Length: 296
DNA sequence: CGCCAGGTGCTGA
DNA sequence: TCAGCACATGGC
Image 1 (cartoon, rainbow, N blue to C red):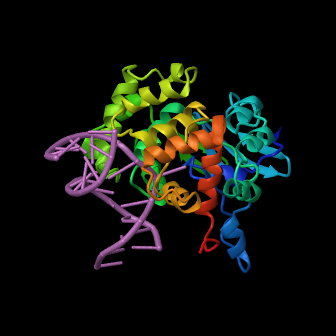
Image 2: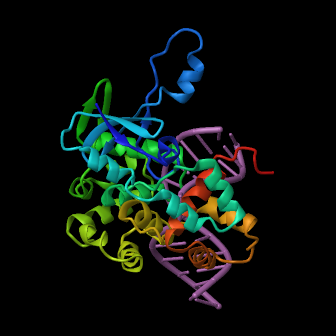
Image 3: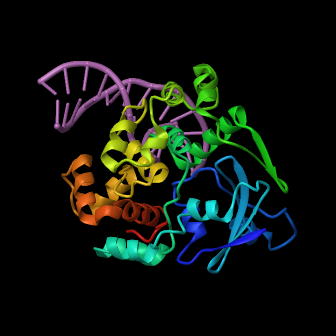
């Protein structure tokens, strides 16, 4: 067990804001009375994988408690994954340019854009298209069970994310049987591309947003929205501004741009919020998804 | 039961 | 370039 300093951070908001699909809130064993509330909230521990390493994390105030079975998962790698090295107050002040994002920041301060693995993010968001988060989670869980490697920590049992070579070698029929639907051939083709070096994932981390997005658009099953998600969550392109159906509705409602196409909304938002537009998007997205009646 | 979901690819104007 | 359409599946 070790600790990492985590100022200006909300683990809960970061893990539940629809950027990562595989973290699991630990649920305490069923007990007698009063277990309902604990069951709902968990006990604060989240189990998941960072790269190939299984870890459990919990936030206590301004620090992160971590436990892992992999010595390669150092505090520095934890800091990197949760983006704790970035100056969040400076980022938030740069995007705090209107009342809507101001309210979202006020409600979810501490939400950070994670630095996830590029391939895992790409594969995950191909599966996420025209889909809902509950089913995305199930699909990825089955995909990892079928093609990943088993890992364990304390009582938790999970699976690593499959390598592109493995998915590329899977049959479309089997992928469909995991519930991927029409995305199965897209995922397989993109896995083949990545496995063969047709998408230079290491290089993409070092190039700019435009170049990274163009490269991502060359993958099967990747359009504007998925490319923006992968650029933002998997390749640290903070200018990316993914617009899904929720964001599109919200922008039409909040910003009164009812006639603009998705592309026009995208261009407008990037100019409006600046180099950290992706952070603005994530705060707005999480805010509308957690509204639950706050809206009319 | 119908409606919806962190859309994409294809077609035809 | 842009609107219109098909596409699989399961949660609600």
